[in-house]
Length: 227
Image 1 (cartoon, rainbow, N blue to C red):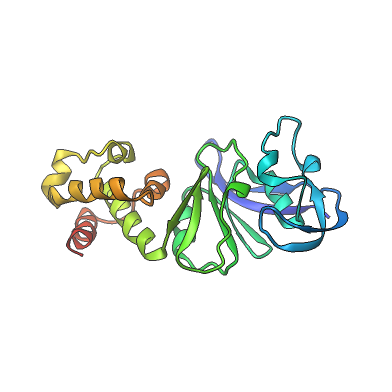
Image 2 (tube, rainbow, N blue to C red):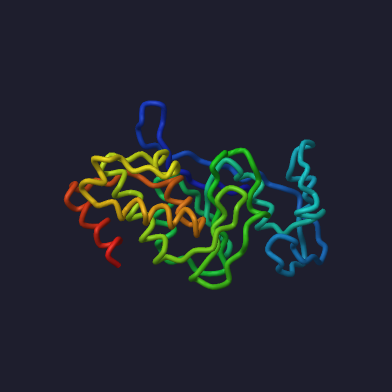
């Protein structure tokens, strides 16, 4: 029986809507396999050729058969999502931070798409511990922790609240009038993160301006810089 997942998004007018995403039903074949994606043993599976189009080229990454759970993920290339056990939760860009900071029961898979054009789940790492964990940002696995994600999202999103663009941060720039409020140490902190870790790329992709006062944003950034 086909399964439907719910995806919270917005329409062309910016109104919140819920979209139903149908997982295509695929023929199941009785055959003992070790799934090349999740590496678990199963007594039946699904032929990859039944799940993909004729344009599919990543055969070396998946093999001929995968388990039923992993086969469902072929439907989800336009979405970011978390897979925990047999549960799949679709995430819009505004929900990614809360999902990263929340508790997820292992084993789980965390995939963030930036292009909405590629199958990513067989490039990602399954997590068998709750923390630290691996997140796939498009095709790149990034190892992080909830504490690190909290600090990095606090830094990026509070700077956004003060009027700094994420594009500027990616270019290693913080506006002069913002540095006057938080200190030049913030630029040194940003450069150190960009030089030594890929983790900050996650909030630089999906961070959101916060509904807080300028004073609260400055206080949060100052606490990070003094830690």
